[in-house]
Image (cartoon, rainbow, N blue to C red; front, side, top):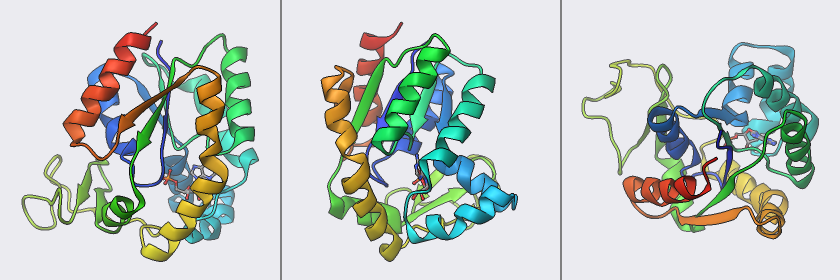
Length: 218
Ligand code: AMP
């Protein structure tokens, strides 16, 4: 089992790389953002509670996301977990450490995806995904081949996230710098931190991540 965290601001490419690792290595992607969006669209009490907070680009409470991860860690099966968008605060990082220890697992690597803010605004404001298969697209850098249709599965259910606009993104970046970026120092000192160039081509980022994974596997 190889368990990794993908750490980086919104738009760094965490979701895109996580999808590749699921496909190529049989790992399990645990994205708290996806879990929360699912709760919102299925209209659960928790989903209703977090909707406004998420749309504003603020973080939901540690208690809620730790609960979600705890639930999934017990149930999912695969060759390792990819924590995508979790942890985002120091208490979440501590909680994850305890959860893994309790289930006899460890963290193999924390991969920081480095990007600059200007690139993030461009990436986020052009982003859309397939609501059926989850493929990620971009108006300029990765458009669909046939207008309104997913290249992968043919679905016309293409969606933009409610929080992928400039105003929410500003708030999401502030949250990242205030609350999430301290995790870089935290994991550096734990000896778990690796960095990749998130501005490189998707294949190049994947190659840099594969090198870390192969070195840390086990
Ligand atoms: P993401 O899909 O990772 O960009 O997450 C979208 C939104 O979900 C964030 O802006 C937060 O409002 C919320 N969220 C996702 N993961 C977390 C987390 N680990 N802690 C707090 N809020 C989260």
